[in-house]
Length: 165
Picture 1 (cartoon, rainbow, N blue to C red):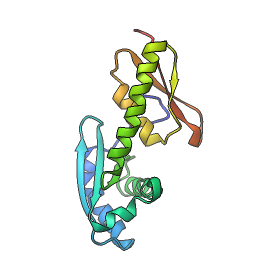
Picture 2: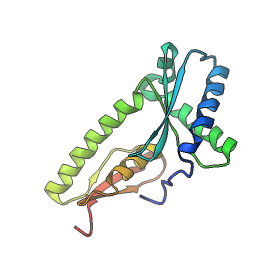
Picture 3: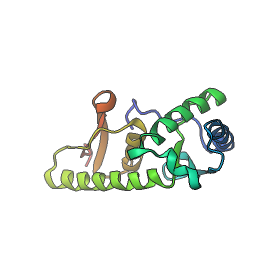
């Protein structure tokens, strides 16, 4: 993984605190009827809060424009509360699950292009959390490696043949 996408230090032990803090945050925002489910995803080595219920749809926003800043703000609050860097995924009604399927479809296409052409393939710009998921997924790939390039909102992943293959 690229050094610019640090792996969070907080693990599954942070889940109970995260769940309580999210409940407090949502209550202050007036979302009292949102159900919160905390889980640890072993494959991605990440904590996730899944939000559901009638009001959860309002937490996504148009094309994720509400859930992304909510996740960002929540992780800052959680990091300050616990003193540990955290990168918990906050999902509402499976929004991120659907988004990840779309992204991995692009990754699979990129892998096939790299294998076919033996040339690098650039994915579209994406946020640090999404890049981290891709880097983790490809960390043990025998033929393809992923690196990040660019700055700020233009930062993207480059898929390329692994140098030792």
